[in-house]
Length: 132
Image 1 (cartoon, rainbow, N blue to C red):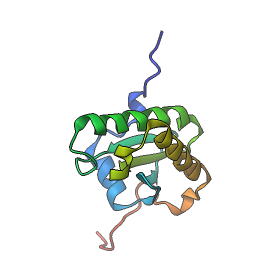
Image 2 (image 1 turned 90 degrees about the vertical axis):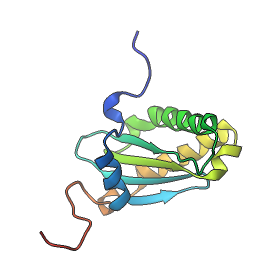
Image 3 (image 1 turned 45 degrees about the horizontal axis):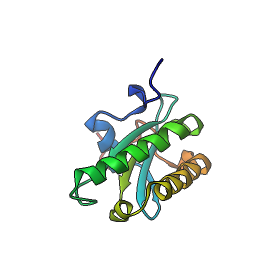
């Protein structure tokens, strides 16, 4: 029986993918999470996590948040458009129980499904103004 985990192709793994999201992407957020997104040409969504020590010095807290985000994304990913996502947590996320965090993540996925993604930068668009 195959594990119900998040497949490798559904994750952002390269530093260049994260850098592209930091420099040229759409963004929105809620009380506990901030999301950056960018349309990809792969035909499926991919998730990247950026949960820093600023959120919590304790690794156990950061890992708990990561597990919750991955689980929520795993459940919602078939309904999401083909985009690259980078989810960042805020300090408020540490003190909230899991069901509240999952509820906020569900709202973020709902925003993504209804967002006008044609306004987000497409792969290959240049973010700078220098012509090369």
